[in-house]
Length: 480
Image (cartoon, rainbow, N blue to C red):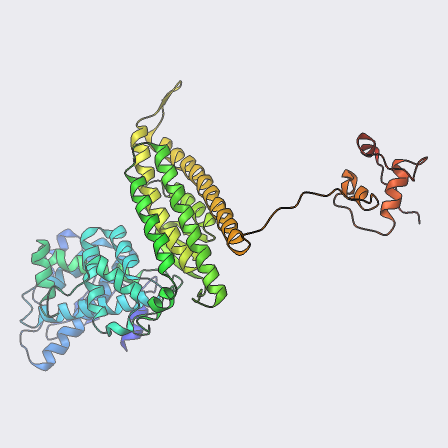
């Protein structure tokens, strides 16, 4: 059976419970033992020599135990997982056994990382998801696994976003050669052998259980390095100026003591980002800089109060012409829009989370006439109210920036423009039906003006009286 088929077998909900494997020793029957039975399990079942046949048998046995450990996690059998980890960590199986175990674990991890990339996950997302499931230690092993897998690609064939995420994670091959990695990692984390193997098995299961996501950037090995930077840098010096000023204003808002001052600074930053979006649109219309297709970007929406945070992100995205999709179970939100707008949403959302946390800290515990209110419910409602309030300020700032940009463009193109005095209409035939309240929303049928006038003043159809008399207009249906 080939390796792809063996990997596919991991996903079956109910795999056979018994596994028979034959080596130099008699047949060993695997049955998930209890704590008492584990002490009676064979402790030296691996080959004792290092000839090629024994190495192949060790590799096959290690592969089978890793497969059984994955299936045990799928079935929720913790005792079976512990038994497999103990067998894999056993050092009395010959000099080649630890090497076979390490190679199988690392190979399986790298295959699982590659599968995760194909499932649409990016480095920062997958490391965060492993950490959410198992903890920080597993996240560090996931980071190392990503660094191992990325060594097989040329840097010129890896998207800049992947490179930035890997650099932020610190994903470097600090261990040197892969041989001996597990032992170095065990010493670095100050764990025993069985705990290190268990951590690797759980991280492997976390990679294997990743759901499918939409792919937002090219896979490693398929990207043209520099294409993204060149496409977005063309004609962008002015836009970069707006962005830098917005960052400075948001940094001041995060450190502001008064909420009003923080809101004012954030609104000014939104205005600058709106100006930047308009400049990008003008450059794209003139052909100076390509606008690029609409794309997506996933942002983290961490607990607690993730519903209120997702609401805040949605409102910020709406103001900046984007849309969001919240993946509640994964703690992620996908923001869809054009690259410049996505940058603005990411910048504002990150700063607003900091400002909201500071505002909640200043609010402190809440009390009302009925007594103290629960901290969680108060902060949940506080964040929801904060999201609506700040979205109103951001929308107002964006509209003001647009009006200012239009006024500046008008003054630049027509410096001597003068507004003429309004001239009242000379004829009343076309003025009356449009100004009649009953006419609003009605179709423009032939003869409607004449019927409206006749119905309003049957005796004086030729005269028009402005004012309250028009309120008595009655619509007369067209005769058959």
